[in-house]
Image (cartoon, rainbow over the protein chains, first blue to last red):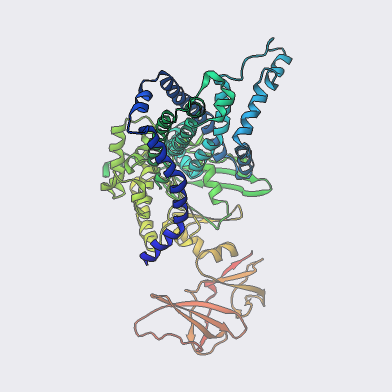
Length: 276
Length: 354
């Protein structure tokens, strides 16, 4: 019986494992090798990683951007998810659809759309000048503001849906119970609803952070030259300086950060929540 | 244990006046007026949709009534939010907080009232002793059985000494044996702490066992209020007669003066009150003697229930009567196909108008 199960499992998972091994893990080993052999074993790239001021600045900037985007996603996403989770079921499907709609549009297209909106002659500037709020168009494109705006817009659905999934699992009766026991609406939220939903929020935050670290198109198009991120730097080293060894070392930093965060995610993932 | 019980304030009187609740075009509750005595155990009994939970939710402050008002010990509470009403509540699915241990669950209402954590946990422990789970304070709710969760929910609902305790189908999720054991415990706890209990259930057996008084409800209306004995022996309507226990219900046709004709059964010497349309006869008051008589029948079914045997008998005029007999030593049972005669005592008949 258990033997049959393991054969079944091997047949079902085999193709996927083979695909990942061949097309992902194998090249990844190549990347690792590239960062350490040139052609003989050398720590040159790792040393450069540790000493290069450019790498330090870009790494720091990338992590800070990922952090601030994640915080913004939490601040905007959690209340939206709360609103969705507590609204009547009839309207919920409609609003979920609205949230998913931009999610289905390619990141590239959404980034270009922001360029159209935020440009010097863009819709936003024209409107602001038109109503007389400003005299001259404001520089919005190619700023940190534009990158934040677009990244939050792109990642928000993920945050909202992850929070929402955790929140709809919470029995509304628990909040009522807290009220009968003397909790004000705010305290019932703070002591019962919030602690029970925090796992979902943390999971959403980790996903957003991981995705933010690897963002490429959006910072490249909206951030301009002064806002280069890790993925853009890797691209630069691969295409412009042809320093593949250094690019590999940078990629490994990204990979290591992601793996650590994934381990964290497993700790807070909603499946570990306690049930009543 | 005793200290916790002694410290509790006695129950409060609750008055409902003309409560009415309308959802869209559906009337969930109509003209609901009721006076609940201090320390009374009152049960709202009815099928789903009868309005019993609506009345409870109105008292708890979960819903705003379309009209009417509620007072506790003479103080109107309709304008107070739930948390200011100081009412304990036990829910059907227990509603224990899954992220808090048992002691923190029970201490929750005390913490909400500003009691420091240590003192709150001490009082929670006393409540836990009262429900006979002294060792379970450190457990998480998911580590408890259904009956244990129920007791913890009860401890949490009474630890802050509310003078009114609401229980919404608290035993609904438990199996039969445990339900019967918990009924006895609930009754004991209530006697110990003396608070007023308003209990909601659709289980008529539970209502009869626990209550000082029962309010039978259907379709948003109160049909009858009375002690379990009154409700059982003297139902006012056909619905009550059928909902509580087992009853033989027979249409009544007017006969000669001083005579009631029970359709499908026969004539009985009894004065029919004006407007009576139905006659109700409890299975346990029907006496059946072997042999023939003016009202004779043939046994069609024999159901063995342990302490009693219940029979179904088809009368010669067409109606089927259910009757039960205690098993007595040496007493012989009727067999299927046997002939019996019913000497119906007019005093056992309850006439119903609707």
